[in-house]
Amino acid sequence: MPRRVQDCGALNPQIADIVSSAIDRREFVDVVTDPNPDFEFSVAHGLGRVPVGYIPIVQDKVGTLYLGDGPWTTEEIFLKCSVASLSVRILVL
Image 1 (spheres, rainbow, N blue to C red):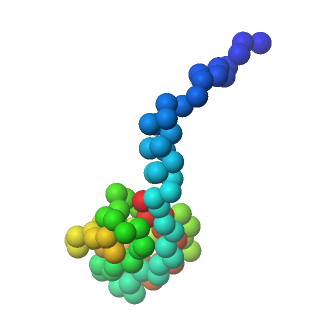
Image 2: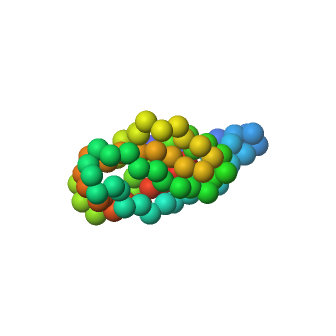
C-alpha cells in the first residue's frame, strides 16, 4: 500500500507564530438580529482591533448575514440580515 502522508519536518517558526496568532485573535459573539429584515445593526466585539471578517457558526433559522454600511471599528462591526430576528453565533476574526 502506498504511503500517503509524509512527515515534512517542523513548521517554520515564523509560520507557526502566524498560525498561532490567527487562532488566538478571534471572538465568539451571540446576536439576535434586528426585527426588521435588511436593517443594519451593530455587533460589539472585544478584539481590541478592527476585525478582518466574520463567520456565522450556528443560527436558529434560515437567513443570510451580510455586510452593513457602517465602518468596522475596534469595538463593533455592522451587519444586515435577510430575515427578522435571527439568533446567530458569529465568529469574529
